[in-house]
Length: 248
Image (cartoon, rainbow, N blue to C red; front, side, top):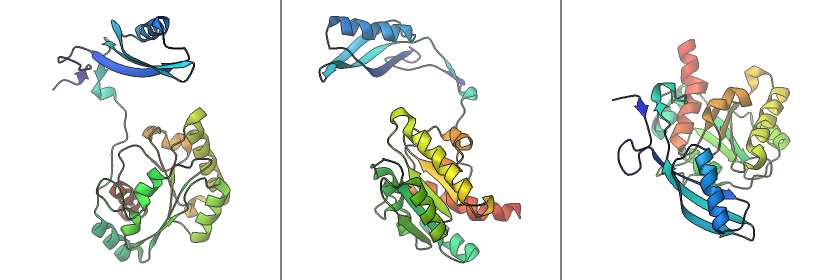
């Protein structure tokens, strides 16, 4: 199979794509023309406005369909692959109990002004996500979910008090790159509070994060959309226990 791919719309390799955006203009013919012109400047030719819906008094949402000539070489795609085995709850519990000899402590929160707990709850709450139980279900993990709008200093202090092995932070609010600013503040606060050997794993999650930015943001791992509790539990177990055993 070729590593060179192009978009598929109506027929294989036809280069047809669909995109949506909002312009700060009222919906009229000129607005639709502006949307088509923008799509054309982005490399879509021809560009067809297939949907337009006014939003409020002065904005319009558009869906544009058209053809692009761009190709993608799969060999040039840079992503973060899972580099650890995916474990079930029983396997995680067994490894933690036998090799760590105590409960593994996980502290989670949404920081800053972020009040969207759906992400952190999906990973931590026993109800879980996508048919998987959350980390509260793992009997060898002690999980503290601090909820929403937690100030970074408060999270650091609680993690220190609880001697957390891992800190999980969910960030859904992304206006003006708030998720990036908050994450940098978080990593800086932990660097200031604890020496490297005593810092917990810093794990960030959210739909708008680029998983390749972990080093840049000063965290250990970034999880994006589609992450399940097993992904996170397996990573923590690997990073804190099994990978260290291999090195030793």
